[in-house]
Length: 132
Image (cartoon, rainbow, N blue to C red; front, side, top):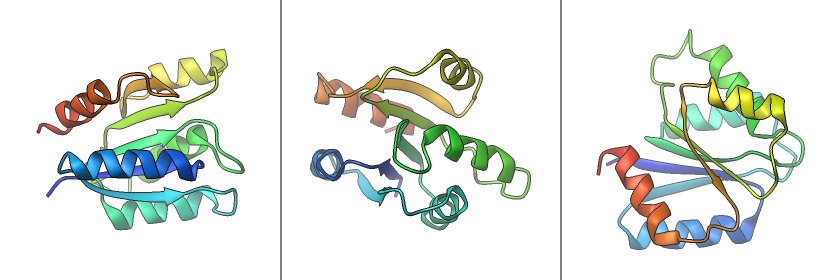
């Protein structure tokens, strides 16, 4: 079964997405980034979970989404299953460097602002990306 992984620092957002994805029949797991995990630890968890898609918060305490994307890219030469599509989720505006990086990252397939205004459309988009 295909699996969605949420990497997020807001427990409320994790709960909201988990409930919605599970109701929609999506196998869902999460990594709560409170600032205590390193980028290597987060990527180790991602590799262990082996998701079909990642919903990744851009701005988190400690290690943010850009650092996680960079670690995935660094490790891709050793791991052939890291071609995971990523949907970036953020409540904050990205700076120009971040926007350029995201636009040039083949893994990033969508960019969604929080709060999510239309959850039904968001879930449809997740399913579409996953091929459901």
